[in-house]
Image (cartoon, rainbow, N blue to C red; front, side, top):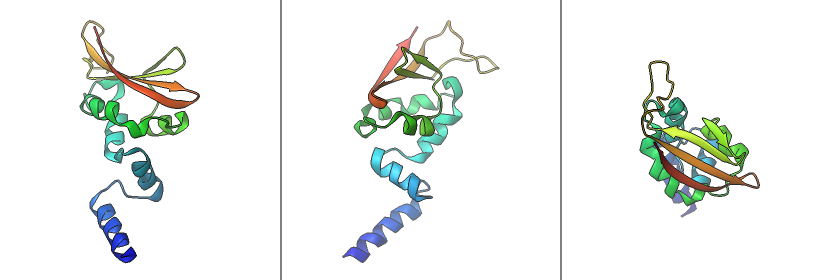
Length: 130
């Protein structure tokens, strides 16, 4: 039975590109968050490509992220677009941007706010900013 379980785990890892190394594999099992989501997240500076927005609800509903140490969070999500009140890490999603990837302030946008307490993720909120 143990050999069968190992075979199933290897098959799952073979079929999924996020099982490239043990650290990535552990991250997925601890936080239920695939590496491809994080790759697209980091590629979407200021939310201009609108890649972050398609994962907003999934992140907000993922209760496994709660308790993630801030240092692990930053390593995987990258630096926030801005920090509010020293505990709110804000990432812009679905923003209208100019050709230089600067957010156009006259348009509504989505922001994901990650609230940290005691250096651990405590809450995730989606905001629509006008």
